[in-house]
Picture 1 (cartoon, rainbow, N blue to C red):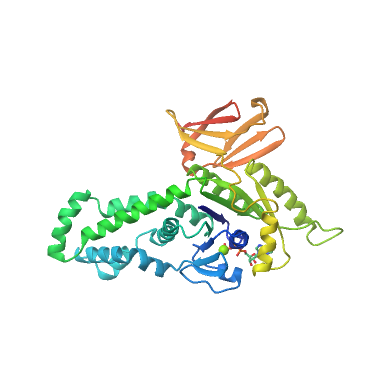
Picture 2 (picture 1 turned 180 degrees about the vertical axis):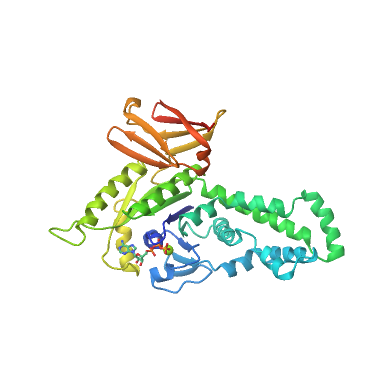
Length: 387
Ligand SMILES: Nc1ncnc2c1ncn2[C@@H]1O[C@H](COP(=O)(O)OP(=O)(O)OP(=O)(O)O)[C@@H](O)[C@H]1O
Ligand SMILES: [Mg+2]
């Protein structure tokens, strides 16, 4: 089974790309589910059909699902939430506050993960296309299993055996099924970890970053790219959407198009060697199957949408005895041609007359660059704590 997730800044075309990809796969006979995890759903607008909180077949081989937070929370967290609510309340916490506290952080996002785990286990679909929320939220979603573990350990900070023994005592004195809640939590945790494994396996899951040829959008894509690599997820393509065609003669858009060319080449160098896929501006909104088909033809002209386009890691950040190293893949450059500098949260790599900008993870602000060296195709940049 394959999972393809689209993310990018708000309004870049994630839903359009997800819908177009799913449509193309389904038309080739691949049983496909396109699922929207963004609470601001627009899959139904994109396909111009009504879509519900469970998978519904909209054309042969193509199923769509728009997650409904409350529906999913009731489905997956119902019992646990009620156990927690009773526990808080029993401990004397005000009812309203208990209600609020039992809506644990990340529960909404985790519900999306639990659906994906279910679909993965059911093996009904050959491909799951995820129309994800904008980059920030998607990164939170992808790091959720660790984050969830953190708060649950604080929720039930006693070993399992103790929960079992005390749990049954709780049951007797309070009537609250604590042990049941704990078991349910354990099950959810193991499911979340399983989904995390699926997402970080580049053979199964590809993340496609959607951008437009505009400064702020590219910045966000570059930042997301770095974090996705840092967390070990595979980005197999960068999609540049809404590219304006060249216009002969004087036009209101001349200036915009000149800038666009500059941004397009910046995208090429920033994400090299990740494949760049392009979609032209349609000159009108894109919805309905006919236009989505045209998008998919532009996106995947002579390639199959479900192939893995790229598997390597371009940036590898790892701990050393002195701090951290960043390995960059720069196969075609000599060390003498390379100049690397860091400015606050950015690393600027000059290779001859080309410039590659890379965002650094926030934590590296506490470290400074201590030189770099080249080994084969790799350049290793060293960071040590700031004095
Ligand atoms: N190539 C294109 N040419 C013209 N319009 C486009 C193109 N791609 C997308 N659009 C339009 O741009 C708008 C935003 O697209 P879309 O909904 O796919 O973006 P999104 O990234 O999912 O947005 P959000 O962050 O709000 O979920 C839509 O109205 C869509 O029809
Ligand atoms: Mg969308």
